[in-house]
Length: 134
Image (tube, rainbow, N blue to C red; front, side):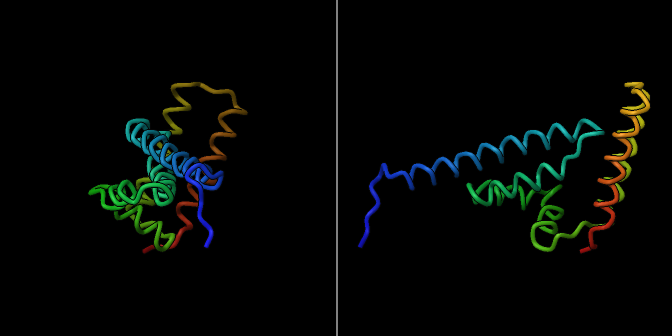
């Protein structure tokens, strides 16, 4: 029978990995919360990342996100089936559209920058819309 020393490199690496996932989960949750207030910044994608990190570091925080009254169903649908509901697709698409309009009017970007941002948001919108329904 092989015993692992409490200071073994494997245990240290395992703990470091778990701490990294935990801190990343908190960071992504924080960015997701900021996204609630900034139209061009998404919320759900960061919360999906946070659930991924918490699933590898803290079942408690994973549970809290998956059972959140506002985001829980969306996060669970994505985690279990890779699906996005129709209302979420509409809200996400509208949010990206409003965010782009605010960016364009408020920032008065160059044609190149405006085109790059528009293309990026169109690709993101296509991805969201193309996901299956639950």
